[in-house]
Image 1 (cartoon, rainbow, N blue to C red):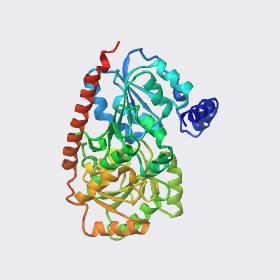
Image 2: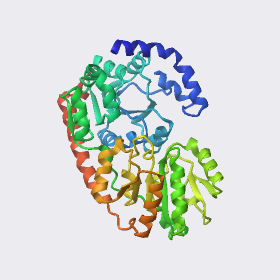
Image 3: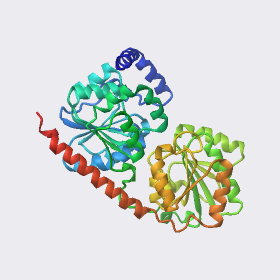
Length: 422
């Protein structure tokens, strides 16, 4: 099986530059730095011992922050690779000024690219996140005797069903990992169906969060102080319409209700504008909270990196990617704001997090657009959004998970003398 994959990825390499050029035209790749995905280094980075962290997108990157910060504190050099433009923007906001943290767009998993990438970077240990099983990368690291650790490991149910047909192949991949730290017992059981020796559960890294609370943007904006703000967060196609319909109906009984749409992909802003125009709804495109004015409109956020500002002022939030079969979006940052959360039933990617929040009584599941409309009206009538107190419980849980994870990693690095090798 690996030889088939190896040959396929070897051949596809010759078409990748053309493919990436198309993505640049569609504004899905960086116009200069796309070459990093082909294994080239676009900056003159020093030849130093380095730790490699790979995260596909924004959520995975943020979940790795506490681990990365711990290594920075211990004076280690860090390479972070991500796959999306939005995750690069988030990286810049967090680590852009740190001279010991370097960013590259993740190399595509072709043998020619991977060999070039590994030849340049002096990797001492590799951390992958969630469900990253790229065979050429993994087997190249194994060949070079570089330890690999999977953080926040998970296998979705749909992926598990597919991998069962290639059980022996995935077993050989998982054997290359020194440790697999799983998000939950459920995911551990799925990993152990293929390989039993290196899996354990510590907890979901997405529970870990900075204890420092953001300043409340509402305090700075008196126009919003008497508003109840309902946001549709990380919404996908069709979900904006569900949120807008719920808002229009709820507005009839709650005059001070305000609605903000924060799409998962800002490339869809014009599509959302068209939706609102068809419904004859006033709208305003904004980039930050201060741009919300007195007029009654639906506000559409057109920027990355400021999501927390909008979460911070939202008492009621619908989490996108859940009324469609996408797997849901991470609700932790919203729960840390003590907001009342609505979500659809398609939340497989964050099942244990939603289960925990359901126990705390801060989440409500809806099955349809009509369901969302009725339940938001009910939430407003009974003021369910008041007196939510999930923040402290999440911070305590996250701190426990972080400490156990760091202890595990520190012990492994010390036992294996990862940084003593010459």
